[in-house]
Image 1 (tube, rainbow, N blue to C red):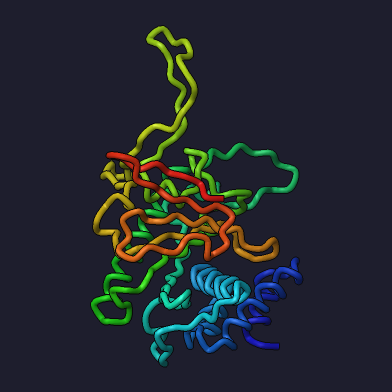
Image 2: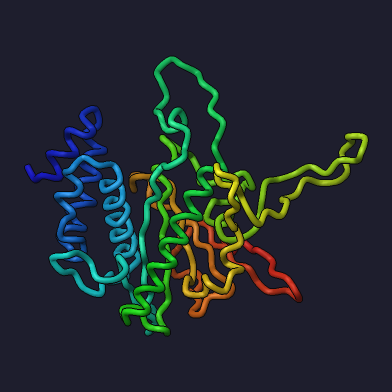
Length: 293
C-alpha cells in the first residue's frame, strides 16, 4: 500500500470508494512527472490545505488530458515546480494554468461543519466572506503570474489562466452561485451584485428585479475590496479565470470560464469545454456580459 493510499484510507475510513477515487487521481498525477516532488509527503502530512490543493491539480491534469491536451510544466526540480502548474498548447498558442484552492479563512465555522444526522439547521450562506476569498487568491495569483513574466518563464505572447477550486469554502455545495445568482468567478472580476427589487417610496413594486452594480465589498475591518478586477488594467496579464466548486471528479468537472475583455493575450473561446463560459463584449461606452453556453 502506497503512502497516499494508506493516508486516504485513514482520512476517509467510511468511504472506500471516495478514497480510491482520490488515490487514483493523485497517483496518476504523481506518475506524470509534472507534480511537485513533495506531493506524497505533503498529502500524507494530514493538512487539509495541501491535500485539496494537490487533488485540484490532479483533477486539472486529468481533465486537460481527457480534452486531448498534453500538459507540461516549465520544469520540476527538487525544490518544486518552476512556473505555473500546467502549460498546454493550442494552435501554436501556449496557455499557462495556475491552480489555487482558497482556504476557508473568515468563513463561519458552523457553515463549514457537515450536517448532523437527524438535525435540521438553517445556515445563512456567507456570500461576502466567500467572495473575499476569491478576490484574495486572484490578487495573489495575478502577482505570481506577473513575477513569472519577469523571470521569462511566461512570455509576453503566452496566455494565462487562474483556475480556482472553491471546494474548501463550504462542506458541500450543489453549485457555485453567489448572491447575484451568477458564479463567484463572475462576481470576483465584474461589478455585478445581488438581485434587487425596485420599489416606490411607499413600498410598492416598481419594475422587474435586476442585479445592482457592486464595485466593492467590505472586509471585516471595513476596508474596501474591489470586485471589478477585469476592468482593471493591472489584470491584463490574466487572460481568464476558471471556477469549480467540488473536491472530486465523481460527477465530472463542470467548469465555469470567465474571459478578461482587456487581456493582453486573450484565451480562445470554447477550448476548455466549460459548462458555462462568460465573455464581456464591448458595446459603445460599456461592456455587456454574455453567457456563451
